[in-house]
Length: 336
Figure 1 (cartoon, rainbow, N blue to C red):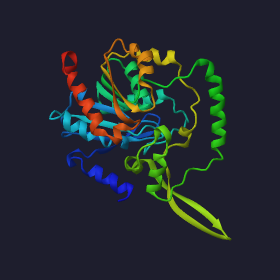
Figure 2: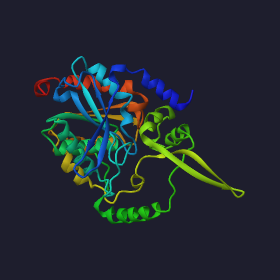
Figure 3: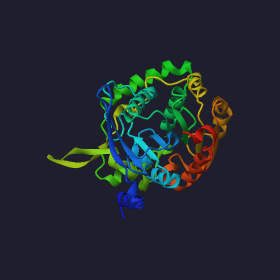
Figure 4: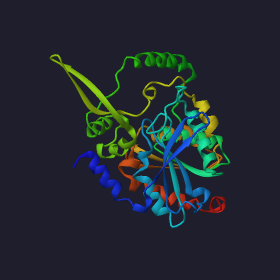
């Protein structure tokens, strides 16, 4: 069975009633953000504020990264209505690329704010993986009265860089951007070969059968011209749909003080699930950042697995998230 067939079999095991709806949101600047919208009940049913979630995916991923986890959460948090809106962040998946070339984290927060306004949600919960977790902590620290719950997947806030390193970082960004002009886009003759390439992403690598879940939104058709012995042949294949600007260093990074300023404002309950073979060293982060979330309640646990364990072992991750969410159904959160 091919990688993509394996992925299709995995998706088909989900409750057919939980197939997500494709959504599009046009922002004020004309940018179109697309998303997958899971609902456990009819659209007219209104979930509690702590049972509707905005989900932010990780770096170079897309909304498909929540395909394994979202249906489990909907089924096990029922029978009350639950909904999860997983975004393709700008420049990722099927969403538009930014004409401004600005992919700073706070731009994603602005996008989400407009989407929430269009949805008419006054309050809601958030889930974020990796870069999406960084976005979640900034979002929760900015809209403190809006966010009811915050679930972080292998993340405990934004990556940071010292202020003294910023000039060198900007120089590297400028050099990367120049080099991008002459760099060829990746070409994959088959979807399976793209899945294999995604599995080789080092710390960001995902097993091919789960990388396949990203491909329907993460690839677009492409052609490659080959010339040999005076003959020209055009090969049909695939390339990434992600904006190539996302593959280079950002123009600016956050300092620890910047991240701390947002995270110390968080007032909602926060649950961080760290992968034992993930990107972040749990003890270092806890020692340094756990006290930042002093206004809210922070719970942290770890699970066996790599950075994308929420895809590769969604039942395990869900088994941690579900009891935590249910445990928040006391006091003020129970009313939300």
